[in-house]
Structure formats: structure tokens, C-alpha cells
Image (cartoon, rainbow, N blue to C red; front, side):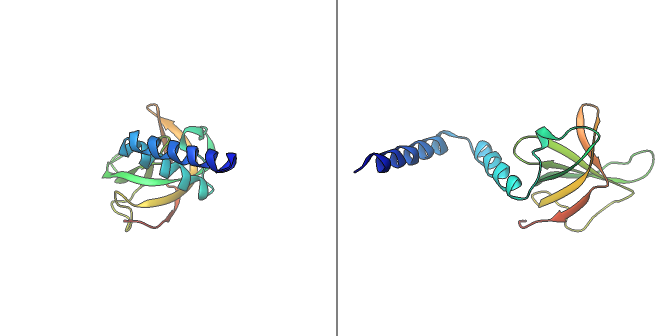
Length: 129
């Protein structure tokens, strides 16, 4: 076996051992980060306030939370790096917006109570769920 083959074998063994030692959550986060990058999305941790960004990930939760007496559908999007709340004002339900669903969203990022939020984002449902 030549040196290059030996190095590839060591790398494969390292990857295998790392995957075996990693938790399921770590592996899912790694996979989400890779797929989000493939979508042309900005990692949520790198999203600056008052700037338009495209993010992609999986919806963790979807809840109805009234804001100022009006309905608001709020979804928590996770991309493997961080979480952002997507809020659609005046909506009670949006078909396809369900926990576990993958989507890509684009909009202006703001911060509320220390959390990143995107109000009325444009979105595209992706495969899954």
C-alpha cells in the first residue's frame, strides 16, 4: 500500500471513529450545516441584524402566538449552527409549515429579546416531512 492510500485509510478511520463518538444531535447538526451551505444560505450564527439574509434548515417548532391582539404563526428554524424565529403576522396556519419540514427563508433579520427573528419571510418548502 502506498502513502496516499494509507493516508486515505487513516482519514476514513478517523471519520468513522468521530461519527461513532458523536451524538445523534451533533451528526444532525453537521448534516444540516452541509445542506444549508448547498442551498446558498447564510449560517444563522453569521446573520447580522438589520440585514437581509437567506437561511435554510429544519423547522423544530411551529406555534400560534398572538402579537398585539392579532394572530401570528411562529416557527423555529434550526440550521445546525443556531436558531432563528420565523414569524408570519396575521396568519394562523400555513400549509406545509410543520415541525420537521425543511425550508429556505429570506428576509430582514432583527433581534427581539436576544433572539434572531425574521418577520413575514419569503420561503420555499424543501424536501422532507
